Image: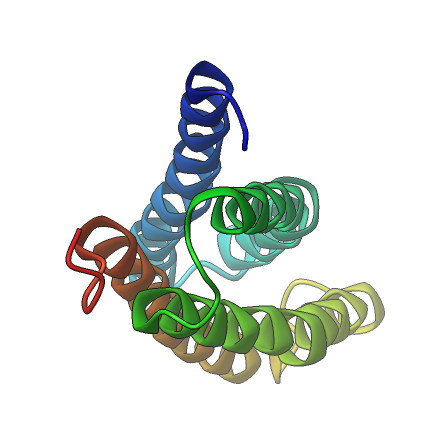
Length: 157
């Protein structure tokens, strides 16, 4: 069993990674709405590049650290057969799969589109709208995971 003080530090870093990931995703959605409303192709291209940077260099490491710490804490104090843990793992898995197999490749496609066709790439706005829709679904799941982690439904905690 992990010492109480160590467990609390693990939990603190787990929560910090959740704040980085979920808070960052909320902020990106706010900026996405503002960027789309501005209807400025140069701003849209720049924002697309920022999303790619944040996704690969901030969200991916934060989410992996979050999951590793979560697994360690579950092994120590909880059980993988509890509903709230199964629900969180399922929602995380969806987020991971959509990020790895849709958002990542589509963002790379968008980057290539801008590189080959320039700032006024014809298909860019449509692709960006699709990316924003998927990322909003992901954001809803991330918020649900936060509620799941705090409320721990079915655990009696």
